[in-house]
Image (cartoon, rainbow, N blue to C red):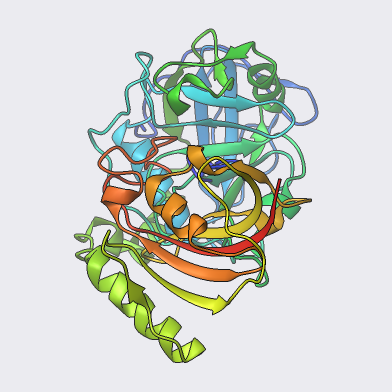
Length: 379
């Protein structure tokens, strides 16, 4: 989820001996769990020895989750590591979308990203057979599939169609790795807390931040022995990340692949952006003052999709003058009916700022952006 799981318009611990506050926790049946539950607490479902059980204490109440290390071994090992190291203590449930998700594990009460103790991103395990049903816990991520680190979310509804892995979707989904087995009433209480925008999140335009802080006070792994085999199987979590391939190299690879597929050659303009016209249009060309109907698929140099307007019910209308500079150039030199692939360098795209709608950001600083454009009409 793109961290922030962005919408389609630009639009993802402590050791088991720690003593927890006795705030109370509701099991799925509604029975209260008070104090620190043991691994075999009778008020909770029977413990599966192969599934780590984590007790999360918040200022709203307690939540207990069982993790599925068999279906999502490295995602589980990653979460357990942060629980053991106490990373989540003092972080917020910072994103609340009623009837959708509550998300946490990345920001402090001052709404600063908590960067100390963050390990390398993990491999996406969304294709594991687990669905985004109500009460499941999953990892949030950035635009890149393998970008999840600390942030997680709990599903408030059946979000399977929206968030599951599916071979036919461009978005690879989000990895479910466990289920709430106690305290879903607390999750619902968090979901119903008042929310509003915050200047440090989504440029202050997203009304999803709780007006009263929802703070994780402690986390405990209740059955520490269950995590050993899982952590051993994913020991590479502590290995250094592989060096990133430079964007320029990724762009050149994309060009060669596209040219081989289409039989066409990219043309590079004096301004520095490149294009191939897959289909020439026969209609008029828009000006910067026009409003247009257009479809596009926008992606980063690594291939991760930022926006796909074909997933919308109808093509959006755009004011040409409000688009990034390189996109204006690409569109005003097209004709209605045309199909064009345009490669926009950072200085003509989102420059050094990018678009920071999460951690990692929606569009990183100094990012190349590749657009497949279909100009439909002038308005």
